[in-house]
Image (cartoon, rainbow, N blue to C red; front, side, top):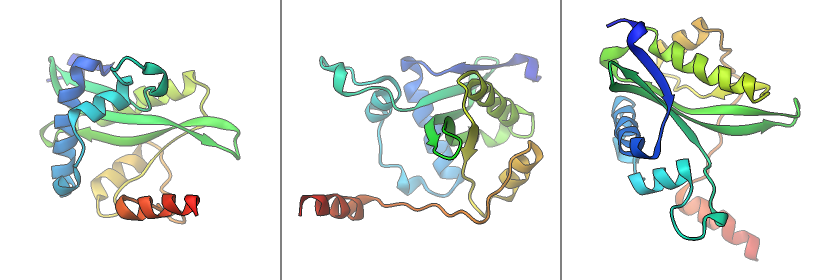
Length: 173
């Protein structure tokens, strides 16, 4: 199969179950299947907004693209806008970029990053960012090959679950 048969497109509401299956495949690859606690309905609400009668309180907060090879979904990327105070410009943060293992090393990942870079440029974003697991040497090599800088001096900070609830409740004191 050649890349001439590759189609990249924005995910639609009908694609949400496929995107969720690809998320689970990504989690399996990263040995994090246990961390997938979300569901298709939540993903749909976050990608396309709430389906309920009062849409004013819930807007889409992320976007996704799907990579299809001869009509078969073989990868996806999920991303959202962030903001750089130093640049005073929006940016795009890629939360996930995943190609099924049997379709890797064909240029699909690079085409997906290029697609999102084109969106970033058209939206006047100042940067495109993502994280990579330190053990994922093949991904690190790929990202460096396409021109990404790996920022060793930065660390991700995360608060989840009960720690998040506990910290939020301190606001009420």
